[in-house]
Length: 468
Image (cartoon, rainbow, N blue to C red; front, side, top):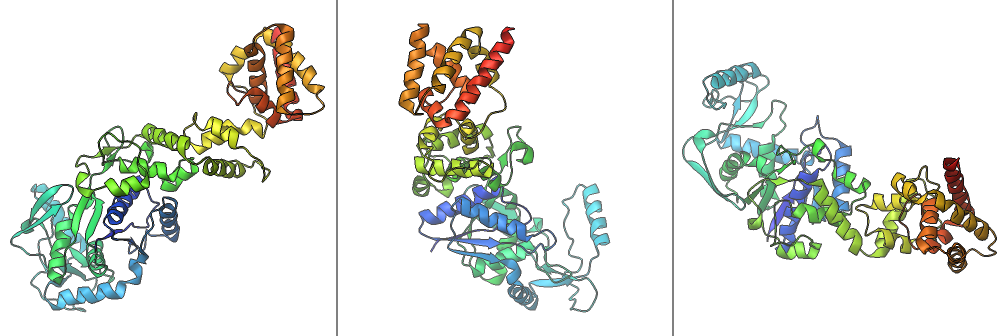
């Protein structure tokens, strides 16, 4: 059975690069009817935090990247790593090393000054040291000195590395804790991982890990190293490019399915298709179709994709998200308030849930200022009389409903013998602060008598003051 894994280190939040790796691994396992395992690589005790663990789990949950097993924590498996390290020592496939940091640093400086690749020189390889022979000993893997490591990367193709290029890496630190290259081999073997999908910054680790797999006599997984994501300036993606926590995209009003759609297109394609449902992703995705070249993160493209999802997602779900956003912003909403018609009107004009919520705030609270362009165009001297007549007639209405408000607006246009735009647009800017809204009679009805009249009066006073 196909088994993939996503193995983040909880030293920070889940970012775009990690989320894409998780998605690719998840899609492959789903397509192949396999299992997807979540493993938390938390052996870096100084940098790993519970807060980061929870942030990763929340992001996976929000993106709906469900896992069949996990989360499995490496810190719960130290006894297993110690057992395997001792097995390697007993089989003369690993050895103790007493080289000090000062010696290693001096060796590195010397090699670099000679334009050599910095690598451990095997000083302790044949010393046959035992525990207790010295303080602060580490354990190194006895890497083969002859031959080559060859593996077929499912993205990059065949990769060949000479063993002479690889040094004897540390697999246990002086405090006994295992290192990354050791734990990942043990975990992938014990968890029967068949395919490892990860960033291509791990390509250099793969030959080392393969040699450990071989030393243990266990099956070696297939590898797919995914090219990195770059910013639009061609440099490695960072916070200045928008590489924020995945959960920040929730805060910014993006939909999880839109973010997944954007991520799957970062380095993978299916013809010219841009929009993919999750089902389509699972059906069409393949590791071999991943582009070998780095991808470029484009925030505008992400916003465009999010906009497409806002237009087509079930209206009920969009309304619910808008209500959540409004309530988070301190807007008190009647539980039974139906804002679906308002949301439906605006969702084709905005890019995020936040923009949508901001666009309809005028229904629930007074706005601080008018849209400058809209006010300049609508609040000319000729708008004063229509607004005054509207104020007077609307004030006299015995019932406040769309039909009666429409009749008032129609009556004012007939009395002044002007078209609807000369009356409706000044009224729209007066009560909404901008130049766009649902039909103005519906808008005024929803805003309510008290707020509508107060806003019309405010506009009258503004226009009057500019005419003096």
